Length: 132
Image (tube, rainbow, N blue to C red; front, side):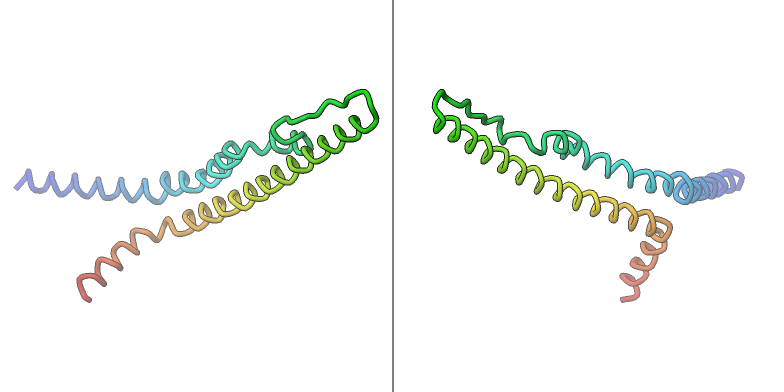
């Protein structure tokens, strides 16, 4: 009977350890993930680089003007178009990055808010599955 009692004590300790991890350490990790997801989006889109190069020419396409006035005007127009395209594309990517950051943060907040209730949801759905 001593081995059975020892096994029950061991199982009880494991359950309490799981609950302690779930409601303390795991929950804190879920909250910290919110910031890491936002940082991951920033690294993926490289927002600092996009803001620094917002008015840079697209694909570094730069036309050097010639000697005549019409060649210089043509080069200026080419450069203006290249910078405009670069601005529009970078601006759209910045907006996409901001939207993605908001979605990641919202998902992280929802996950952190639901974290304590997940074990209860598992029990509820298991009961519903068995009871029908």
